[in-house]
Length: 249
Image (cartoon, rainbow, N blue to C red; front, side, top):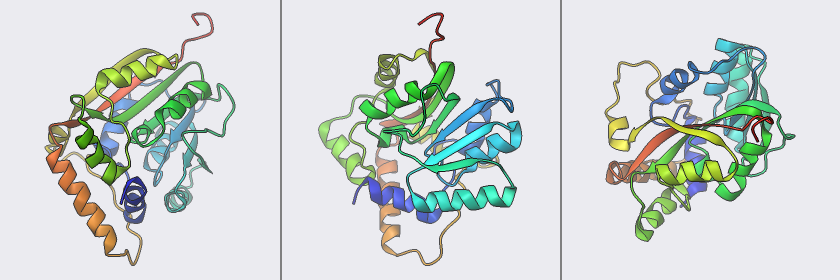
């Protein structure tokens, strides 16, 4: 088992807003951005399209959504069709984004980058942002440097080769030329699990496929076990960074 199995689980259950805080946190973070019909947004690893749909519905943004998983794209496509939203949906890999330089005003990435090759994905984010553009990236973050055995345990379930600390994430964003890097929200897994159940959108959305193989539930069980064991060692952060404008680069 590994990362591909976990991604398959997310797709089969049609989990939207799987990250801590769910779509409610996404909406809160985006409320601080200047979004309009002229804003060109790329939703990297869009999953079932929950965030892309919100951006198109609430702000009328020109949204492009990409995902590698065909079942995720199928569920996103159905969502956009039902809601009659003009979201451009493509097969796309965060490690090699199929777009020209400076194509987007805003990149939104939610619990995706940690599953990628950071040496490839982060430079790609910087490349496709226009000068002055903004990256918002919500990612799994180690509360302290993890030991080799801890990383192996996480890799066995999620396929993650590296889980950076907050300082390491910030350093990596700066390394690819992004500036004004800030942590705008965050906490431990334990704090996220104690979230307010009365907040609409704070918990994941499910769109399960029919006839799910029982073996998938074993992956879910392992995910739950790891979540419990690492609830104080792992956390999440929402990072915001800007690509320097030409005048300051």
